[in-house]
Length: 441
Image (cartoon, rainbow, N blue to C red):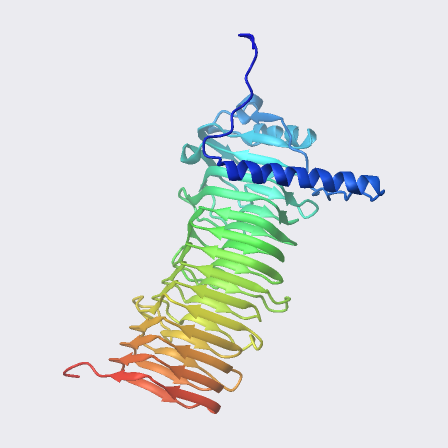
């Protein structure tokens, strides 16, 4: 072998003789199968190709189009020119370098494909002046395979209406990402956050903070597989009925909410809308619903799983399965339902879990310090439910059970004003529960 020749690649040191032999045999078997199929004239299968857009290479900075980012001049026209250039190219990347960009009208994105809008984090500030969205995909265009990332938006000059979001996807959103966004007041009221209409499918909203909003933080339209991960949505503390952290309007399946805080709102999470098709599957994990009128309010027939969550300090109910949810199934496991009625000066029933229809499982939950009823089951529309392994303590009333056909087993009732009122009918089993009075009570 000459000095210029290259020796063959050695087998990686972690590969054993048995692994190498196995790989050789597998490769030989695959080749033999292909040859055999070819000899007998069998058609080879064709792999279906996913219908995704080809990536676009055009990348521009808004500074190239005259945006100054000094917080003084109006940068709207320059930024819109940058977006239009990328749209005409069939997609690409629009970047805001660090700076403060005055925007006096909505930035319109008239393309359904591959628009990536980014900043440099909190050092890139968009000054949101007019009472209209900052970014608008109109009704005729879906925000598809696009992203908005690493931007700070300050509401300035004019108060925004609760119905005015920062980002409006009026034609829908598909296979897209929104991440590391901060929406807050810069002296004017913030409206809503991110609104989707028509469709919301295979999309993630990650680590977004919406601070003191007056409208809806995130509105999710029909579709499937929407993930809301981390972040916080904080209301303006006025508790208007339109002030909702996350609203699932209907007909969406596979919505995942994980480690997200929804605080100081009228309703932290609203599942369903009057007159809309029911949502399908909702999965909520280690989220916080705090200091609102309702923490979670479900009005449709979705299957909803709540695991390891903190539902606390709400005025009316921490979790409510309402009377319209006649075919709903709610599963609450772990976590706590806590401190109903803790907000000073806010009237309400101060209940923990309230179920008016459908069916539910409550397992391994601490239900505690609610000034109203810890677990309230109302009426015959609630059937076939289970409460087991919970610690229910320091509530005005631990549990009031109505409905039909239920099991209450393995729970600890402690230091409630009244531990249990059992007023239900049908088949029921109440066994193995411990009723413990505090010493001296």
